[in-house]
View 1 (cartoon, helix red, strand yellow):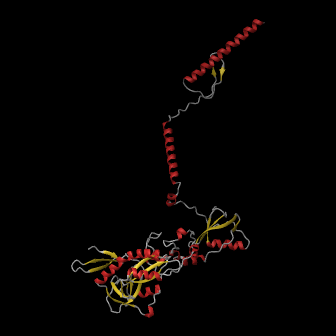
View 2 (view 1 turned 45 degrees about the vertical axis):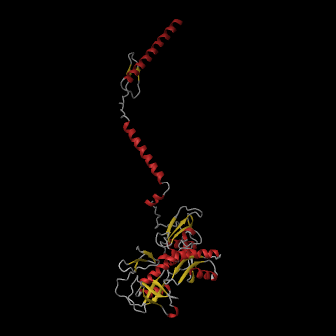
View 3 (view 1 turned 90 degrees about the horizontal axis):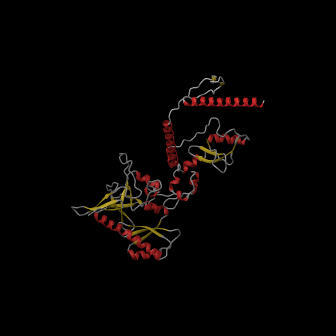
Length: 442
């Protein structure tokens, strides 16, 4: 027969004897412990053991029969009425420290007893009780809805001997469930115990993964819940966004209180700034405070984040002392403090929206640069024309012409010379014709 999983144990049957056997399965239950000091020999023997039940319910029992018990043993313990089946979760001197941590006080100063190690018959009966829990929860929700009660039944836990069951419910106000208990007793033929829990305890019983990527603290190690207010978020300079501050229970996250004392102590060393800092170049307003690094950021504009300057706390105290005396500092940064230009990291470039545009521009520039280089290489090399020195050129008719300082070679020079000669010949013919006309008129 295939083994079945329940309450952090794997149940099965021995092939030879046919008896039910159980094996511990670590990591399948809530509020599990890691025995860090189990290998150390210096342990005080103690007859008090911690026994865990379904999900987060735990209690402490006394080993009156001096049984040889280890972590993971399934035992039958005293209950009211009958007996219950649980698993040993903590032994040795760590039990006393755990009782002090959770504030456990035995009823009338007497601990309940551990009867024996669970027998195969006890384990079979316990397994049958576990199989009834889900069906009982669904039916109980239907009955509560038919009776019009403003409550939510979150979980049902059967006792190991199937005599009693605990119904865990959530309600905003007080609920009169006296008639509901009678209906449950007639429907399920068991003793009924109603136990009210809060939203945090329900999330711990259900379990899940938090925003940090780890198992929920209420399901892994928190046993007592403290009140969490928005003051914890304000002290740590967190954004008052309910979507980010709320957990799976729709309440403020318990982890907001983990570093509350550290931040509150660190804030005592920070000065209270009610007015802007006075400097020669204007007024500076506080926009951000890094509490643990003891750095404060100021802006020259009250409405925008412009001209940001980050200075340490001791510099802020110096400026405040000077302003109280009616003096203005030349610069809030000071001579010894130089503002650092933050260089963009790989992550900031990766998160930038315009990173794709930059890559395209770079590609275009590179292409244009390549085209310019290719065109430059394709152009023929320019031939430098020699400079002809200035000389007087004598025509065939004896006239002197002063050419330009630069002349071109080859056919262009000959064409120019022929053009000058033709012009000179025409001018000569015109002069001769004019002289003849003058003579005739005379």
